[in-house]
Image (cartoon, rainbow, N blue to C red; front, side, top):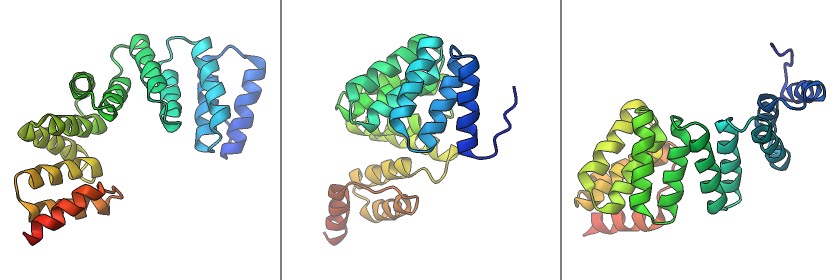
Length: 209
């Protein structure tokens, strides 16, 4: 069914009217949740996503959105749990595997991160964020060449993806090429990515050495 709304608020009103007639439609709850997210109304969004997955337990995107809201609150356990539910709901959906990998990496669980991220990019070889996060995981493992390879693959798809450029700066720094590291770090900053202060200091120290 087509929508007639022309503004976000009209879209929200239209979705509410549809739910009044059909409160068990998970997709409409999901769409209302995403509309609330766009407006920054996260509490209402969470309520709609919970309704969405209750009405439609196979709606993997709903679990992913709930995981994102949990991450926004800093709740890594809940983020992991929601994304695992998304994987069970739709095993060939790459996004939750990428999110699971990111959570494990935040916890320093590099092997678990690598496993989830490899699954994500196997399902979707053009999943830029997962490729870049896999590059980060491999760098943390000390596999510099593999980190460079995965990050470069990400940049073939999205040349201005800051985290992947930052990975290449770390690789250059690890190899002692501080001039190249500085150029890559500056390039990553141009995309809006902010490198870690310790990295900035180490590159500056390397250039002075």
